[in-house]
Length: 508
Image 1 (cartoon, rainbow, N blue to C red):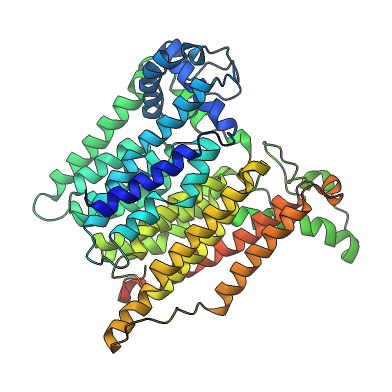
Image 2 (image 1 turned 45 degrees about the vertical axis):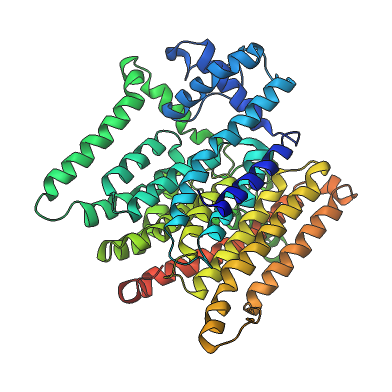
């Protein structure tokens, strides 16, 4: 590994270690409980045990990952592996679990290294692209403060992207099949893999044999994952854990997607219709912002079922899939993957705000490529601004306030100075300038980023004020809706590009 990559890796790892004493969300207890379940109980009890409310709800391969970690945890502090030790958080337990996240990030670091090393442009790509991936502020906030393993999972996704770029389609599908059996949320990316594999790999003289080989391989991976539970007669219990539709369309804190705008519109109608049109509305039906997890009903707008969200996701994917089918170019795969993840984020059922990272990380690979235009890079800047801003409420402790703001602002500055200003560096080189002028963003983008800063200041001042007692959910609702507008703008630009520019110019 080149010195620049080593320096970046060490710097980011040192920052992660410094964040070990930070605030921990309930996800810390979730994963401690999963360590205990997989270590202390038999396989037949993994998906039926419910001593804790934080039951195992990831696919079996991730459960086996927890099982492996638990054998190391046993030597650190065996008390963390007792199922009934709810909320157990000794110093040894905290350090161990934090270090497992840091260690598992090696998957992300190595994948980012091989992708960046193969990049032909060392100004926009190379070490700078590596920094934007491994130093992603969202991953630092969600994994190393809030506590999750997104870095490892996205690292597996990046390995699959790298294999696609190296024309190793079969291995890329194998890696993705493994990823699906670690976190099923990546199923939103499945249609892109399906279309690309059919059009790029399963062609030529041995197309049928290639298709058969891919099919057998995928079935073998799923059999290894779910086979034991099928044998135990527990596949229904596993599926009910993986797809808990009883949690409702939106999370307690709305993800910044289409359903945040939909829910906000319903609440506006609850207020406007009785006053402006004298139409009676059942206010209790529209109570969607109480911070509770569960199925809530809209007061005015039509109710949304899981099947409706699946249909919307598939329909929104059609332009991208059609464009990819017509031009299955490996260089376009990362952008298609980012768009599919963004469609899942926009219209999926009970989507968490953290899922925006599934789109941001592969989009980082795309915007640093020679094919990306300045418009694509501006979209990346806007999506980074909106997506990262939407993650800030996850860290609601005052001691982390300065850290989270600095991490996001610094990351956005790096995005601007390395990705966006790169266009001016190329132009300056062509005209013989030695120092490029800073690139001017479109006024709409500047206005949105200023608005983001103003909203964050308002939410900060709002907390602790008298208004908070009457409107406790107001800052979260405003943040969700404002960030949803930014994410929706990017999604609209991407689907427009695929719909009207994809056939001739390759779209995204």
